[in-house]
Length: 142
Image 1 (spheres, one colour):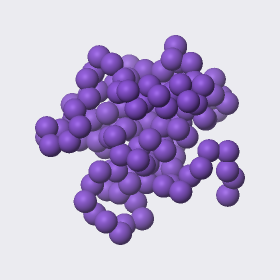
Image 2 (tube, rainbow, N blue to C red):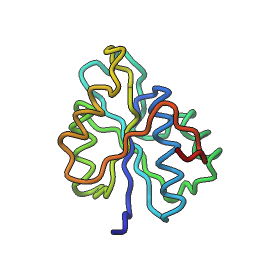
Image 3 (cartoon, rainbow, N blue to C red):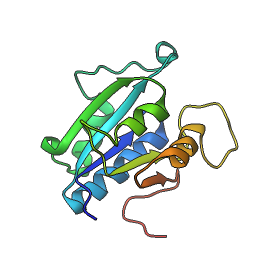
């Protein structure tokens, strides 16, 4: 199975950055395109606000650091809860063949192995899902 597009969730958290790093590495090896997805839910005004028109500076720096070609990168800011927005990425126009999420986001449920969004995506996805652990270090195999 060839995956042409990888969608990765991003909420500005350290775990989301780790997931983006993993997705960029996987896409570099496979030649896939990466769509970084940010959901603007009801509580968006309480957290970071991301423009749909431009990639946040932290992500630009990460893409540059990973040596990933910006021509194979897309940025999607979509309205809805994080799980629904990520699951929609499997359908047109994104047509992701894989979803990537961090193990924890900006939620408040401390002590759980998986955050609520990660768990919900895994439960409902119709395509492969990779949950990147907080402890992931690029180039390290476990």
